[in-house]
Amino acid sequence: MKGKKEITSFFGCIFLALFILYSGFSFSQTTNISTNSSQAAAGTPAAGATSVLLYYFTLNVTVGAPSFTAINNFTTSGSYIAGDLVNLKLWMSNFEFFGGGTLVTITTLAAGLGPGTHTFAFANPLPGTGQKYFWITADFASNAICSDAITCDLITSGMYAITGTKNYGTNDPAGTQTVTGGGCQTLPVELISFTGKNADKENFLAWSTATETNNNYFTLEQSLDAVLFKEIKRVPGGGNTLEIKNYKAIDTAPYEGISYYRLKQTDYNGKFTYSSIIAVEGNGNPAVGKPYPNPNTGKFNFNVFSAANDKIHISLFNIYGGLVYEEIKELKEGNNHVEMNADFLITGSYFLKTVIEGNNSVTINKVVRY
Image (tube, rainbow, N blue to C red; front, side, top):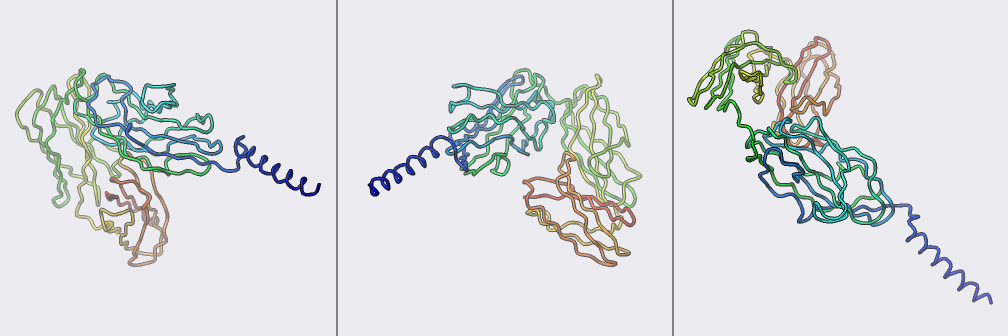
């Protein structure tokens, strides 16, 4: 009888273990994330096109019931501007191809749509174990600019907010979507170049256009930090022309160190567009030297001369003015070697701002993370 009870007890333990395993009462969860052949390919959507595929991934819950609540700081890049898009959407389906099965919208972004980082935050959509398919799409504006292009860059494991154990599969960058046709708008001014150089205490700016349509005037704007700009010159435009036109302007009061500039082009009807930002270094002698090596993997060095024991405030901004890194370091009197490690940054350009606390000396340099 004793042997029979032991056998019964043994099979009871096995049954209990199987019950716990298959009934969902598990103390861990596993999530596999990957992409496959359904990844968005390069395309040429028309202005006004909706649900244009930008990115794809699968999420397969193999054990437990994890919570999926965000995709943080994923990046879109390209020549497009925020006005080219109406929104970005995240979708989920139980079918591998977009439009098949039960397709639902998880969340929508309708602001801050320009190139840069974005975040989808949402209530957990996962019903439990099993495989689900996700897409990021864009709705293009009816007046999107011809030839503007957008790419959803590689989304890495760390960008997914998922509880439990996460097994990340091979992920591929998506194809570039380039606006073509559908009533897309042509740019009023085709800018060939925009350059600047320092001479003594003045900065000389020059730009050239290949064609102009209804171009009323240019506004030359200046900035200390490449974020906040002010108007310093207004230059009449060429109206309507198919000939190359050259323009010049002088900034008689540049900032010490680096001054940043951009052009604002305004049509006769009041519509306007901005150029890219350029930097011009003056002939001053800032206390903070240029960061090196540059480009870099995110580990930058620079030399600082301080007149006394002091502190230096270090801030790093993306090209849209968003703060991505900051710290405060102690300075001793004399020459200092300062190191900063921001290797978590994604590839791209940033602005490194330093402020010496004792004299409020500000220096800004453009740095590149490759």
